[in-house]
Image (cartoon, rainbow, N blue to C red; front, side, top):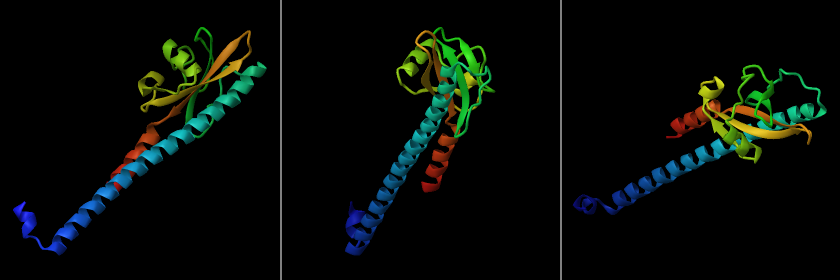
Length: 165
C-alpha cells in the first residue's frame, strides 16, 4: 500500500484507468466469443434442420434412395432410421448399419434435443451435433438424423479468442 501512496495523483489515475480499460476490453472479447459461438451454432443447426426437412419430405413420399446426399452448410452425415433404430438410408460417410445415436440419445433427439456426439463414434475427428426430424407415415414412422461437424465452429471461436486475448 505504501507503493500506491507514493505515486502522484496523475499516476494513480492513469494506472486505474489503464486497468479498467484492460478489464473492459477482456470482458468485451469474451462476450463477443460467446456471441460468435452461439451465432455459428444457430446457423449450423438451421442448416441441419433444413437438410433434415428436405430429406424428410423425400422419405414421406416413399421415393428415397438408400444413399442420400448430405447437403451443405456444415452438414456431413444423414441417416434415416426406423422405430427399431435400424438404418434405412444414409449419406456417404455415414454408417449404413449403426445409428449415429444410441437408443436413449435417439429418444431425446426425437423429443427435440440437439445431441452432441464424439467424432470417434461417427468416424470423424471433430464432434458432431445431431438433430432429428420426424418423417414417414403413421404406419411406418421414420426419423431423419442429420449430423453437423462442430470442429470448424470450435476452431473459429478458438482463433477469435487467441487473436482477441
